Image (cartoon, rainbow, N blue to C red; front, side):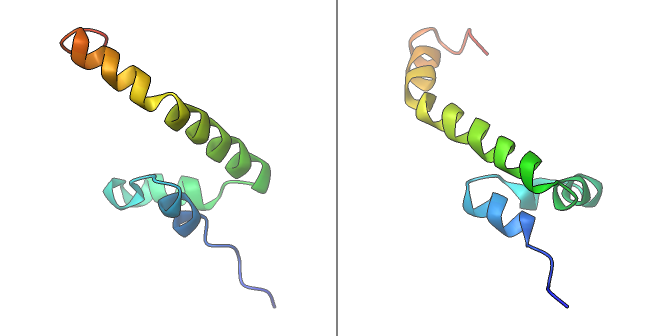
Length: 66
């Protein structure tokens, strides 16, 4: 029998702070379908790609954007 993929390890490797989540939240992520996982990782990648720009604006505006 094949072992199920370790979704939490993959998400952690992608920069998600899964260790800060509740057990229930970690279970939701563990139960993601491969398609859901791919989508979540894609969204995270796009957010990270614009992260420095958003962070810079937040510093300039004194965090008023958030």
